[in-house]
Length: 290
Ligand SMILES: NC(=O)C1=CN([C@@H]2O[C@H](COP(=O)(O)OP(=O)(O)OC[C@H]3O[C@@H](n4cnc5c(N)ncnc54)[C@H](OP(=O)(O)O)[C@@H]3O)[C@@H](O)[C@H]2O)C=CC1
Ligand SMILES: Nc1nc(=O)c2c([nH]1)NC[C@@H]1CN(c3ccc(C(=O)N[C@@H](CCC(=O)O)C(=O)O)cc3)C=[N+]21
Image 1 (cartoon, rainbow, N blue to C red):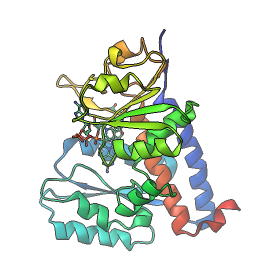
Image 2 (image 1 turned 60 degrees about the vertical axis):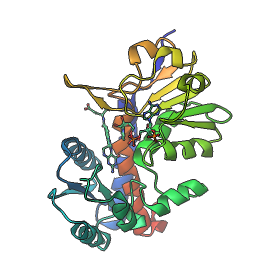
Image 3 (image 1 turned 120 degrees about the vertical axis):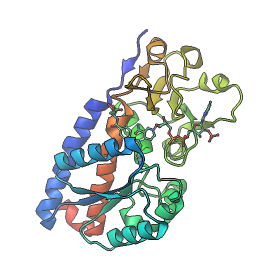
Image 4 (image 1 turned 90 degrees about the vertical axis):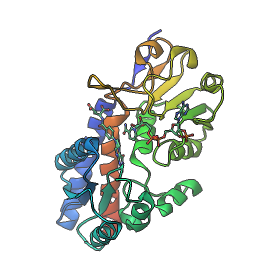
């Protein structure tokens, strides 16, 4: 059996077409576009690439986006002040701070400073708390991207066993909560989990968000399972691979996401979706239904 390929690029294109319409509607009603700012602190090379990708998709969508590039030496006070400025700017509806930060800056500071209504990557304690309580709010965009793939692929979650590898605040943990909301039975595994394969083999839906190239092999996957690969591991020779040994696992799985071309392309689309949602809410979204 060869697995069905869950094509993130196709799904992202569909979602983007829907979002473009939503933005046009927003502009018609309000006379201005939703506004997004990416804050990037220099240092991490890869995040320059991610920032450009967000700017490009924002432009395609008609969302007004800009990149605020801060020097690597930016102090905590300066970052705090920059975020407060963005919080009080009416035309900016969504703020994302690219991770990772340089070691002298704290992620907690960022999470606690971004105004919750502009927190389109769901990193604030309020967003995390709402997610834990099952209340509507912003979600970390990568976790939301995984859910979007499952939804658009009509993969049933209710009553199924979902096994999540990884428990980070940006992927594994929020994803586990979202799967629980959709009535899956959820197991979360991490670096201290002994005999990982004994858990992964039980999974109807297996999600790998670890950051270790090709660690999920065919023996770890139950035949017919849906396998979602969040990992993006850069190869020394260039290019990247996921956390799943794609060539081997696609022989066993029922459905699988490739890397690249799986979760990645949907991540930024979901970020934009939440920015547009933030703009409607901040503008008072009574106008939305007209
Ligand atoms: N496509 C996309 O849009 C995105 C992709 N990513 C990718 O997803 C992956 C995960 O990212 P992120 O959550 O930020 O990473 P983190 O490094 O924050 O978390 C990794 C998790 O994997 C667990 N882990 C590490 N080694 C093992 C192991 N041998 N067995 C089981 N679990 C293990 C860790 O456990 P412990 O908690 O015990 O340390 C931790 O919970 C990375 O490859 C990253 O590049 C991330 C964000 C966006
Ligand atoms: N605050 C914050 N939120 C994030 O969500 C965040 C972040 N910081 N820092 C970096 C990681 C990584 N990340 C990706 C986004 C898009 C692709 C993506 O589009 N990938 C494509 C193309 C990759 C390629 O071809 O090189 C693909 O997988 O097909 C990947 C990874 C978001 N992250």
